[in-house]
Image (cartoon, rainbow, N blue to C red; front, side, top):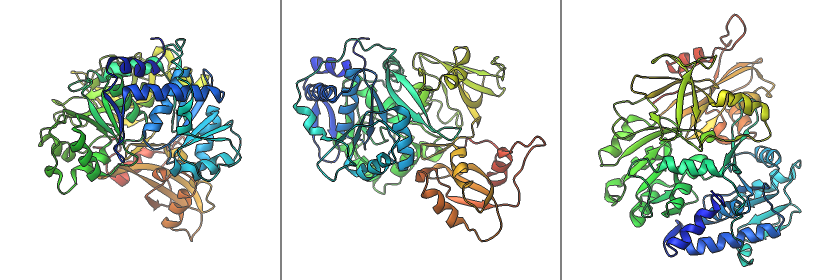
Length: 518
């Protein structure tokens, strides 16, 4: 593959120049492939004039937008690396990602100018150029360019030296040791992920249309929606925020054919009072991921004739790994399905030997969609990919038909509203509070969010309440990571060797020891 993913837009512009590539869901502005290719080429040339070269990092702190897509493909044209930044993070967390990735350029939505200003003010990063949507207050002392000004440069074609094995995106995942890790996804990973997506439901074509409602700083939105559909020559409608009623309106207006959302979004959409008044008969299949979807939600859409599919993905897999197809989504409820076409799966013991059918072990993956490693962390990369298999840290079992069921998360990860939350991050914040002696963070089932964060606290003395601790975390980490509930106990359960028994806590507060719930 020459030119990497940047070449996709060039080829689509040559094949069907006037086909619609992007639509702004708010303004209705449409961008045909010929214009997208022109704008991407001009933006790439401008980035090059600003000093961006192969391997340099370009961070994006933006809502879903046409501009987000344009910057992504422009960086790819140069062989530069895009670093999507979760705009729900605190300024300190944003600064960490900018510093760890070594980003030279930061593209910022107007809405996040203050967040960017605060993050950059903390120093310790290498950002030297800011790209903004419109003129406004300065962002520190950094040179600022408007994104529309980048369109005036002479075009620059994709660098033909970009190879499949070159890193395309660094996607940060929550860290089990307190700091996020950057998963390096290559141009080849993205290409093979598209091939996997082409086997889902009714497949992909130039008539495929979707709404990008899940945030594009997540691999779910990029890997399950935006990139595969643009590769196929279809249409992506971008929206800056999810609104259930508005989403149905856009589905009807643009006759969308496929849709990816997380369970909380699907649940919210099903509760729109006049759902059945919208003409959404064009929908061919929909995909849910990020957490198990409640069966009543699945049945709601199936009763309306939708092909509802569930998948299990990971950032490190670009993200496709397992798919629960339409025929099995109810009969195998609780399973995460079987492998995608180009993914190999095993369940192994602590010595990486295969376990018997029905026995619990660690889920390990192999395939051309599996990431190149963790940015700047060779030791962790070697450990995670030992033996040529990516070790997910998820515990599961396979039945005789190859369906995988996850029974626990080795790393105790919580998935709330499609967002990954690692308990240790929350625990480390709570431990800084002088009134917290011990703390354990667990996930408990939640009808709306799939799982919600609960902190089990042994207090240091008296005089502390639940609201105070929740507010304490909300001032220090992203709100989706903060506990929605704090439970005070006299002691936490430990083994004889001093290991905290989180399974015991989960069983005590949820009635089930496993961390994965439907």
